[in-house]
Image 1 (tube, rainbow, N blue to C red):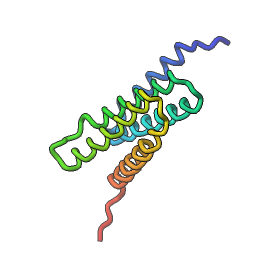
Image 2 (cartoon, helix red, strand yellow):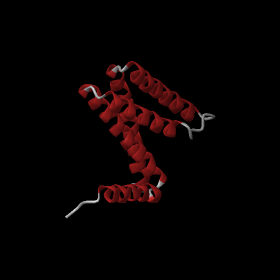
Image 3 (cartoon, one colour):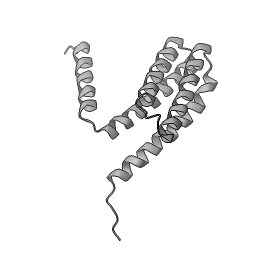
Length: 134
């Protein structure tokens, strides 16, 4: 039996596109954080393995995800400005880590991403929790 790799990759691409297209805005936000965490994990592993192209690819993708999280923020609000500043800080660290090939910059970004992701998961769960009357 011959496996058509191109066909399998196309099927996976369509499946993932369908997941994103049918996801709620909250689910999409959480998907972005999941992808960001995967990118940072890949970059960390690539640093450890000395695979510089994979380091760069992972960090550049993480930067794009960070920009996707930052760019739609309403910076006319206090929360929007604060989050924009946090994302800007992380983007600068990712760019610097990539240019200087310095893995020591990643743990701080990972910690921030983990805290933001957890806060968003908690907020999403609270939105779907039954109201307590009483």
